[in-house]
Image (cartoon, rainbow, N blue to C red; front, side):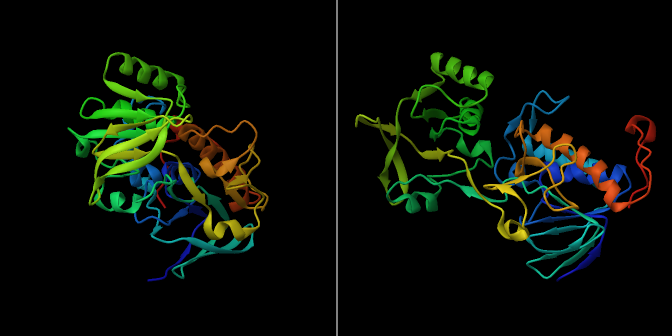
Length: 338
């Protein structure tokens, strides 16, 4: 059922950065409403890799992506923010202090500012160009996300790719599965520390590195995988035994209707002023992976910092003429919930 909601800020995207923005806005006694195309909060952390460990969250040497979302949920709970899930933000009209945001389900949000925290936008995996791929996807022999690590216990797992996801999951699965990693180069694009761990695991015989090769085909019957065929650029072909193929070639990004709002963009990213996180449209802000500016780091912790910057800038839009008497949370505590 379509809803009409009035709040200070509409947050588009309920991933980790969007959730933290609820907290930062709440600390300034600004109300918000969350909109997300997925049916649950958490973005990629929930939908793609809830058990994946994250190592660069302050005070957490390691925390599962799903647990991070659970903790953010606890942090935002006092503010009782309405959530419109399974909906896409569609239309934007009005001006700073008096915007209307509509969704594809007919909801109308009357807000003073808009905060885009859409991450990669609507996302989906880049699928490898392999004949007969659909049949193997249908049986689960080819998967693009790891929802439950335990599902791979005792399996022969071939991971294709050279970025952080490929390396992180190779390390995470090596103790419960027979893991082979296929990459077209011997050098990986992952964080140096985890790439070094991968090399060390390969030396110990815990992981097989299949380099320099790239995917060429799949072998099996009735959608059940038995081998992954790989080849070098010189045409040398070999078969790697496999029960499951995990291709990690990144995600395709689509901003959807937001792309039609007239925002200045660099491809699928929205340009912002890093001092305020405001976009080219006054009163519309962007944070997290969707936002870009010189020196931008695509890290969750950078998005968290941007949430704080944006919240303070938004205060001037939502409360024009009102002075912001900022206090640290250690002395201020939590304000009254909205």
